[in-house]
Length: 313
Image 1 (cartoon, rainbow, N blue to C red):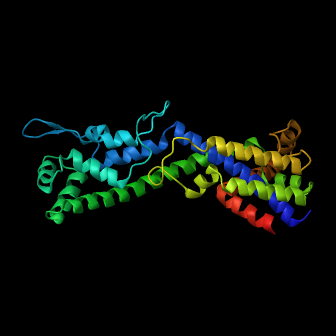
Image 2: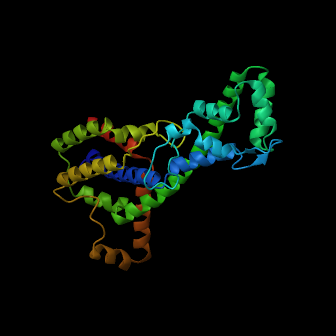
Image 3: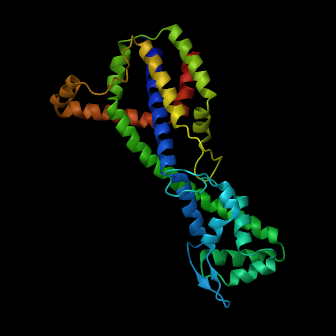
């Protein structure tokens, strides 16, 4: 058994598990509408949330409600049957945000915009708009540009918060999958080392890897789209990810005489052996799980690239 063959087995397993984690995370994100929730919360914070103040004409100013009901927001929305924030978009361009904000502030020109700003309640939004309108002189486009830059800065922070949330969920999903498949790195090595990978198997892997690299699943993973940056799509990659993982798993089984290095969960004998082995046995098992989880966290695109390099040697 060559080192390359063993390495190939490891890479395939890590790729399979990474695909599964990515697919499950994509499903969870869409089911809970995490992208639209984080985006909308960021926008509400920029607008000062639902703050109502009456001007001299006793007309209520509610920027959040006006912003939400604007036709540009409606056109950017993606209906979701089970969404808690139904109708909210996953992504909004800085240009659209600036246009909507200026419009709901009656910004037909800089004079009317300044008059509306003076009636706003004291907030970060009011301070920002007063500063930028004073700097703009008589140029409304300067205000729009400053608003777009401000939006992009805030969305960078929102994006970071969303990614951190996804990483935490991903860790939980990874732990569940690794333990469920009994995929600790030490056991994987023992199983792979007892089997062989042939040249014909390797050619199958290359063909499948090439096909996968052109799929929407891989392109979506590589692009790293998130809640505020990149295209929004109605259909997720969950089905594609699971299908890709299933195909790789089937190939892996055929390569090892129908005995998959991932195993099929826990057998009673292995469970008893781990428990009866005492503290060191459990510790080694947990260490093996931890190594696999760290490998999965590197992501499917990384393991796909490694797979290509190995199969080319």
